[in-house]
Image (cartoon, rainbow, N blue to C red; front, side, top):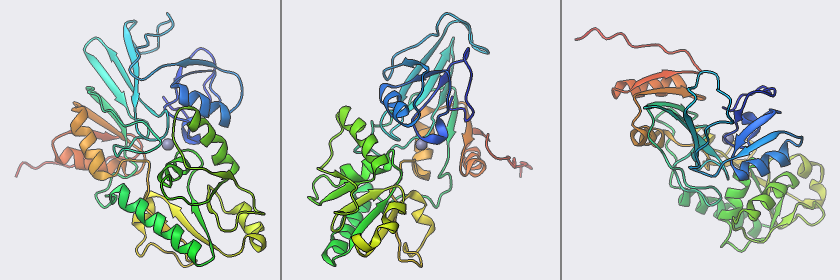
Length: 320
Ligand SMILES: [Zn+2]
């Protein structure tokens, strides 16, 4: 599941979603249809693709998979992270495992809603696995982003929203649907947004980024590079970045005047906890971000938990 290095023919790889740190040039992949389309756009080339709908059971291609009994079932479930993102559920006999990939519980406007399922063993991402990461309500964050855009335009400046081309760009674009603002999208975000539209995701009108006419538009882009070179033509910019890490910065404006809004496609700490309660696992393995710290919080609540991506410092109970 999600190996970083390309896996040769003869082994299946589950790709949970199309972000670059979860994909590689594997020879045979199991994925959802949206992930297939997004992955093809970002990583062209030929590969064997086993497409699964959410909840559709797959029991292999007749070959025994290493470490799995011949009678296993693999299903994908919505992870709520980006369009097509999936959690992987494996069951064999009465044993079961759930691997989350990246996920979030808060409903998004451009991704399916996360659906936790029970498993005896849970492997979960814990990017924001520290109590200080509690995101404000999404509607509040969106409202501040809208205010930022309107205020900037009313001062004759051009607002620039920086976020990943896959997922973040579409989420903020969808959130501007009722705002009636002129919008331009960086080409990498534009290409992926077209794929989102083919899957029924609704967006306001937008145009591809054109530095000659960009002045007076809200620009959504993963990078400032094309804008900096063309700044004499676009005029003064006011920049905001969209990331959960905005919570690390108070006030949320850096020395260059860049604003930060905590819009994230990952679960925050309370949602990570809620997720574990929903899955009701017997043991949990944590990955990414504050993996050891989150495992410690779980153990304090009586859940057997270990970090996979960091060293655990297990507490020694003295029984007093
Ligand atoms: Zn991701």
